[in-house]
Length: 93
Image (cartoon, rainbow, N blue to C red; front, side, top):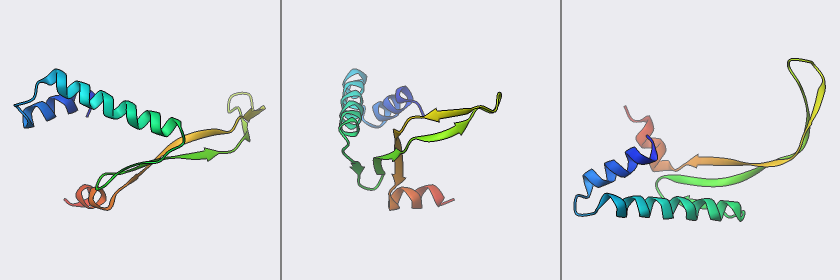
């Protein structure tokens, strides 16, 4: 599901709200989450899951084409862990 599809689904469920207002709310929410993560904070949405940053230390890798060694700098990687309610809903078939 894309962000546009998500906005349209919310608009269908809440016909009293205008699409432009829903777009604005979704944009503000996603920007707030990104801002918090960029500051090293954890984002948790109860029943859905949590977003956190994991640090991947620098390492030496190998270029598969030439075989030469390449240094890869350390970086932060986004990590999502689904909440219990989300896991149960996804695994229920």
